[in-house]
Image (cartoon, rainbow, N blue to C red; front, side, top):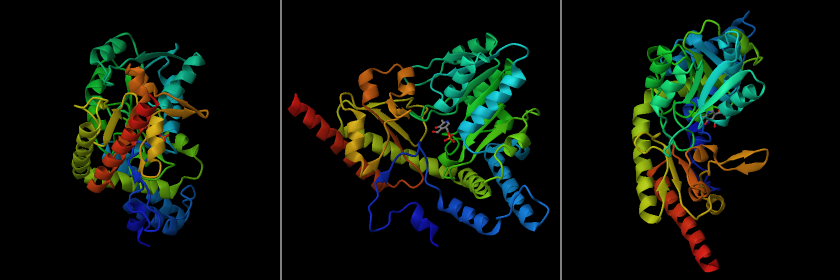
Length: 395
Ligand code: PLP
């Protein structure tokens, strides 16, 4: 089986759209798929039953993956818990934090207003139940967080702070090392959502000291259905119990996640340099071709694969509809309970409604080529021009 021909190329009979939505999910790297296939075929035993060779082999595959995940973020394997998604990791962790840090009163938690819904929803539920006091930390119009605001919040007695490493919509990168220092000085826990960042940025959990770091395999060219909750040596985090809740482990997915982490560790510098230059090329093509186009996020500290733009007066859903068969990009707005909500991130950045309605999130990735970028630039420009032409006719 030639895995490579499946992963990054389209079958000749069907020209698939250019995939530029890598913040939503990444294609599984062929090397990861090969590892998963080998584990499925050979290491099929039940790792919860290690009384014979097959169970032992499957258990070893999990432990190898734990070593690989820990190595990517400079942590220790025994501090890595595998769960089925980052969303589950946050829910499990927040339950643990409420039990551990409350000290006979309500837990004081704080989070940025631009955290992922997985975090904000879990914290919001706890707040509604009266189990935590929740403070939300505002960001500026580029999604940046003021470190004085963070220090002030910690000085006010915050027990646990949630800050993402990089935003999944506008790509703004947060100074996690500095925030971890602030939190450590005030003896507060810091929870870092590195789901979007771990394929592009290096982390040093042991050295920087965030209390917890969360990774999601399917954002890192690994399979869906597995994520890691990593602690910085929290002796009370019941890793075995947390993993037991998952039942029989998904060994191929965990092994694939481990392989994805090893590939990220090895290829990160060359991948990010190449992807950044393609992103810059696409950005300059779009800004050159589309009048009034606005680039969102912190352009001086942004994920290398992120290009988030707004075209005022051009509704983003109309652009996506025109591109449906040619280029896969996203509006970034959330679809919850079947209703499209405007992005909470862009609202938190206080962008004008025209910029929110015209927002397009473009996410490049490992398989993106210069040709993809040039074609996508052309197709996106044509889609926007055709909407503008129609609007001009309709007056
Ligand atoms: N955090 C961020 C920043 C994300 O982008 C996502 C997924 O979109 C999640 C958390 C949730 O990850 P998962 O799909 O593993 O639950």
